[in-house]
Image (cartoon, rainbow over all chains, first blue to last red; front, top):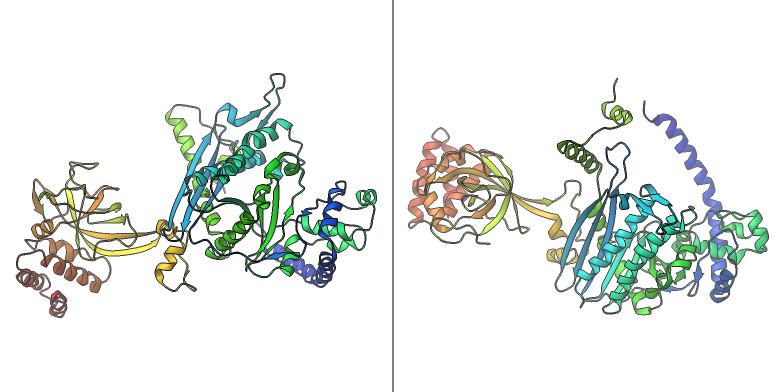
Length: 403
Length: 213
């Protein structure tokens, strides 16, 4: 017997009832937080954020007026958009060999008087010892991390940015280029997981940051803006900044009584449960972007250097999206405006979601059927070479499903 | 692309590549969106000088053309609500040229062996990925000089009778212009059709009307 739909439906109904009850109080909460946004001074609040690192919640530093709103600028007559996405087949202990596959899909679109498109995907299979385990470089250390699960996800993110730097190089250098990624520029996976420092060095120092350097180097010789788009963001960094603005408690009391998600005191408990996008849904009109905020995630603050992650929210007409840009884009008004204009144009062309990201995803996606084919190809190839092929009894059981 | 040199030395244009193949029909994908040869036109596949060279060059008549999304799981959606012209949609979405594809289907009507045209099914079907070329005027004239291919074309079926008859009429009209006396060719072909469809006078009459230029 699979999922009991009848029992589940009753629980879904109950959940919807709770949401409906909460809706009224949510409006009151939002009013109080929006009032804080209207009255707070951005510079003072930024200083308070810098001085409040001990709070149990992560605040963004406002780099602009809190209620700032910007319209997109005029679309360039000719421009390019490059995007890259990745998909992977994780290490499968039911396979006879330890390996993983990363498929990088990408596209480079040229718009304007000479429209064109290049779509591609490039799978890479990793099975060598140095790919399967990332090892500490020191000869005195035998520390090692297996590449699978969350670590493989982060490695894939590195490959995506490396792929984007390559895709950007292939775009017409005479045209402005938006290099667009899906998701966040922040490698959140490295935060607070207790990974050894050498893993951070491998993934950031030897992976992500050189790829970002390569994009920045290109931006010195051509018009290039790098941006990452987060659809339906769940982030609360701006809400937390306003929570700080509302908070009347000392930091030590806050540390003892409050959590990263909830405040125990009035009035800052007005921010409990709110997301950044709830605020910007109120503030922004379709097409507008918010002011710039700087992320205070320890990962970007401590390690990203010139690529520290800044972000703004964008009302696309159909949702509030979060656009992350590196500091070198955020600090240049023209680049920032270009990122806004081109992301908005991508959303329009993609009918609600950036067309280039959607296409890169389509190029990268590894379907369930692909995974099964991959597994069979591995088995068949090993058999042909007279190498041992075996699988777990669990896997065999799933395949047969005896009655 | 003019890499297929027919016997008469003139150049034939490569129009696509076989993606499905059977003894009596094949389907080809065009290299360029919407660049299929006309319905009813004669095309050739494979032959010497290509992969699988040694297999005979096969001839087919286009019986249908369709354009759709390249990936079955990605439905094509309307995009032009705010566009002034159809071409604006393609200009605004340059990826469409890569994500849509035009395919055409052809009924096999004969093959070439030792320099002769044979109006029978070939001993083996075209190979997958074999190149499809449009036929030169000379090839069309030589292949349709005798009406034997009409037997296979009429028997190929595929779709409704009305569509099938339309394809036959279209094929004859297109071929006629490459004959020294097009009218004489059409009259001769009409007589053959009348014999093949002797039991269906209304159908013959309808087809003869379609043969008029």
